[in-house]
Image 1 (cartoon, helix red, strand yellow):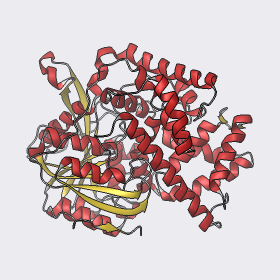
Image 2: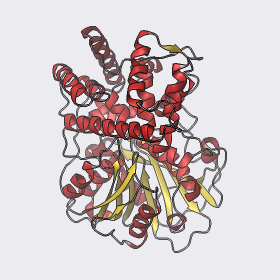
Image 3: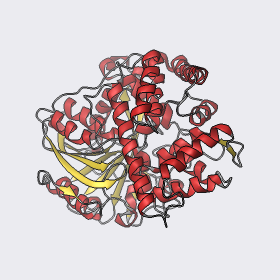
Length: 522
């Protein structure tokens, strides 16, 4: 599985880990990619306008968390959308699954708040559930849930919405476990062959349908959701890849927006290579911040004072003799690398990573695999959700400028020198789209002419969507306003009182944050 696709998938971690703490589990227990069917349970009253046929689905939070949030109701629906919006006459459709979370004390209702957690491949249904548990667990503020229905959706091809599934568990294990920087020609060729195999098998299963998973198609589904929930104008909160989805919607349907918050910006103007290098730079910077934290707080970091050396030594040792794990896997440099990636999405995971690396040196791989499997959505039985199948399908459908194998091999060496821990991996992570058999439908990269002000939130220490993207996206849209969080990890809302207040004032009262507002880390 290509490394770049692992990295851009991280908003699910960013949102859910921030919510989870020690109470709410990080991921849904279902690894089949099919999820809990939306719409199970008894009928619930419709909110009025709209065409969605809502039915009670308390079973969803119960299966994800063990209980629903106090004072919240959960209703699900499924809408049908054309497989290809440019060929609606064919009559072929996908199911798009929705959940509506509503406070039982709701008053002065404004409308619906549509949420996308990113990925691509993250489940908006799961995220809406996790965000329903309130501010104490990092969820949505009461001020928001008191006035909005929270609508989560699994985009086409994701989770409960006709999920695409074409990568075997064995191939995912092989990809995640492979050396993140295959230096020798033999190792590189082997990784090329694995990625070619994955792309070929996805093409054999889905053929001409692969282009239907593009961001442009998904953005048109969002407008169908707006109509189905009965909103004349959309209020939207998108994280990470969700910012790209939101920006695409803003260009396609600028007049249908009430308010839009884009947190953790993707820059649509960047080429595929530029986007990958941007992430290499972002993760390198985030890891340096982690290393500096270790040095400054050795009591919390058992691999201090030089965390970078401890991690690179652990990966080098694993290449010679990997520590075995209880399920038969070995903690190869690839799994260690994935654990590092996983930990950089939230500052709270830095302690976990330091402990995992220290324990690995003592022959205990549990901490490494706990972090890695959370990120990969790998179940204890060895199966995976369809997060990375969808991630691959969307990214490659969106990309017309994927480099070839020779260019990737060249960039691998160049980026290794510039970004020692992450550069080479981000380069070879571009391999699968070089072989992708489907047609492409690139997303637009222009102004959202006619749209209202859009708030673009950036985090200075964001690894996956580097802070520099924030102003670039805001400027491209022409109606963007930058809000900065001087913190660590991927995405900002709802992290601190300053960020919460600025975003809530905009979502509720359409009060745009003061130009240049920078919120402190704590």
